[in-house]
Structures are given as structure tokens and as C-alpha cells.
Length: 111
Length: 112
Image (cartoon, rainbow over all chains, first blue to last red):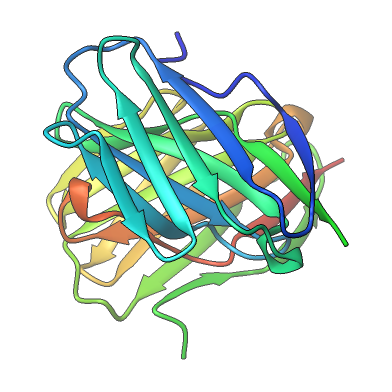
């Protein structure tokens, strides 16, 4: 049972515009969320995280929003750049032991 | 040198063969993990280890085994490879789960 879901397998956005990647979760016990970015032929790299005590966390062009009542988080990238083209995974620690990952969204930035 | 090194980077093997994927890390982390990535399925946990004497099955451990030879080394074995084990395999380390993982560059395994 997929406890972290990314329902959009792919997303295309014009360079300079906002990219919004979405993630839903089913386990209300999750209290921390992370986003990873993955380029081809490389391993995923940590991008940004958010604790459930916050509803927003910002790091440069990247902002993550958390809506606990809806069990939904989103990653906003503003402005989008060609180097942002990658696969993005959301993840949550499960039982404080290991991360469970979503299925990923492939973001393509169109020049 | 990379913090997490996986070998080999690519491997083609035949059905029924035994194969070992190796992972070593210089982060000094106790926790190590093996994941596989399949299109449309994301990253799924195979095995994880919190120290040399602690080995745990993940969600898809059938057909795999692991060995934690040292704090820095964690190997994944396919005892008798089958075609549906064709995937990208990633090793990762962490100090604690919420700190995020450091991943290796992956091993692309093809079973024919």
C-alpha cells in the first residue's frame, strides 16, 4: 500500500514560470517530509524538508507547503530553470526507521 | 571520492546466476539501505541495517540477501537472478532517518 503518492508522473513547465509538484500521504502519523531530486545516471539528492509543526519551508527558489488536514504537500520552484529538469520524489520517515518514497514526478523545463 | 560508492555501475547477468552489488561509504554513518527503482514504482526498500549486527527486511526482500561486512560496507546479493529483478539499485546511508539520505550513483542491473 503506497503511503506516499505522487499522482502526476510528469510535468512540463516553461522556463521562468512556477513549477508545482504535488504529493499526498495517507498516514497521519507522518511528522516530517522530504523532497529529493534525481538526475539521470545519478542517485537522488536531498532538496528540502518540512516538519509537521510548520506549514511552509523556503530555501531559495524552492518552497514546500504542508497541508496536514488534507494530508497534502507541494513543492514550488520559482522561477523554473532548465537545470531543474529531473525526477522529484517526496518521502516520509516511516516508524522513525526508514524513508518511504513516492513514485516520483518527472519535471521538464522547456526553454 | 564519492561519499557513497556503488560497484559495479552497470551489469548484465543471466537468469539463475548469483550476483553481488557492493556499497561502501565514507560518511561514517551507521545506517545503510538498499533500494530499487522501477519505472512508475518509485524507490522501494529492499533491506536496511542500523549497525553491523542489525539487518532488517524491507518491503521487497524476497530473492535478495545482504551482508554488512563493516560499518562502511553493505552488500546486496541476488542468489538466483530473475528477469523481473532488472532495475536500478541504490545504496544509501544516513545518520538518522529525518536527516535525509546520501545515495550512491546506482547500479543498473539487467537480467537476461
